[in-house]
Amino acid sequence: MRDVDLLQSALGLTPPWVVTASVFDVEKRRLDITIDFTKGSLLPCSRCGKPDCSIHDTKRKVWRHLNFFQHEAYLHARVPRTKCSDCGVKQVVLPWARPGAGFTLLFDATIMTMAPVMPVYAAARLVNEHDTRLWRVIHYYVDQARKNADFSKVTCLAVDETAAHRGHKYITLFVDLDQRRVLYVADGKDAQTIQAFTADLEAHGGSAGTIAEVCIDMSGAFIKGVTEHLPQAQVTFDKFHVVKLINQAVDQVRRDEVKRRPVLKTTRYIWLRNEPSLSAEQRQRLASLSRTKLDTARAYRLRLAFQEVYDQPTHGWAKLFFDRWYNWAVRSRLEPMKSVARTLMHYRDGILRWFQSDIANGLIEGINSLVQAAKAKARGYRTLRNLKAMTYLLAGKLDFALTHTK
Image (cartoon, rainbow, N blue to C red; front, side):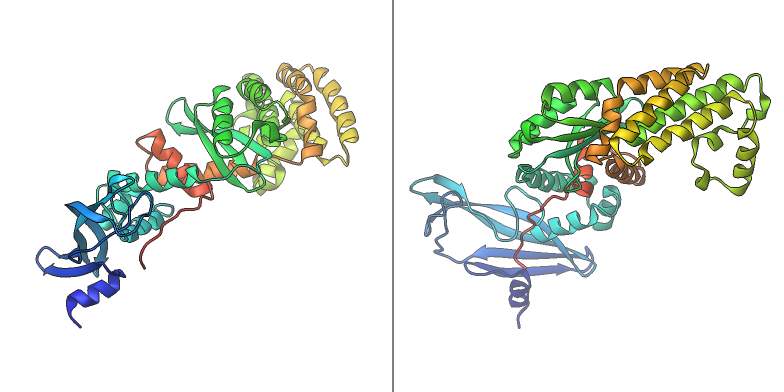
């Protein structure tokens, strides 16, 4: 079998496309393959599909293909434009590359396989390309997959922000809790992110009116955005963020008290973690300190008591327990605990909504961790667009149409 016949079979080319030549340069570690169409070929219109259109003109192009063993491979071809009586002059669709691409479809598929499991700059070094070229491929397929995504059945939503860059730069993630996928990534963390999400939701066949449940933290911006743009949604305030507020109050009590009670130095984390996560030494120290009359010990007991709200068998019992806890907290003479108790009472209905919705942001916190881990491996992303694309790639459950000839 001749080399051109072998390459034709390997590339999966069918008439009128044929491999006409190949040049292998050992010193440059490079294989160049020339493809052409047979003389007198008639090709279909790329717009309307009308068969047997004549060739109007051609333009020579080059594409990077998968390596031939350790050698870089490139495809060269005259790309024809057809003359259609209905559509005019249109460039043909090639079986080995998408329009405007510098890589073949198989090379694209390789990039999209590597991108979720290694930093893009590492993948670029592996294939000996600049990472900006790889990002163009990633953005193309992510944008195309998102364009075709169907959000028509989305009814249950979680919303949370995550850090984008050092400093006060954030993105907000919108997650479909039923399908466990990222639907949308918005710049910032204000009320406008909700508006941007609803526009994107409706562009993908969904409706703001069908969102029945939303899990958010007690951010005023998120509450305002949900109220204005998701009017049918019942709000559940995330358990993690509720407990986080109480932890911050406990820590404030400790910081106020440590100035006069040095025994509290280096004890911050034993008051904020649940006992099973402490070491034996930390548990022993906690047991000793929690039996004292320290203000921090009293705040800690309030923290433990509040967590029992979520252990109640029904919404009614939880409401009764919550109200008793509130009365205890506001009479504690511990200003940080009194303040957080008043805040939680203000949002009581949304906190106790958990007993009807049974939703929390645990999934979205896991996605945040996944995104932050990828960002750390990549040593950060140069642009927000890159970070958002990687978030969709890792957690969007997108359907990538990576078609190719073989």
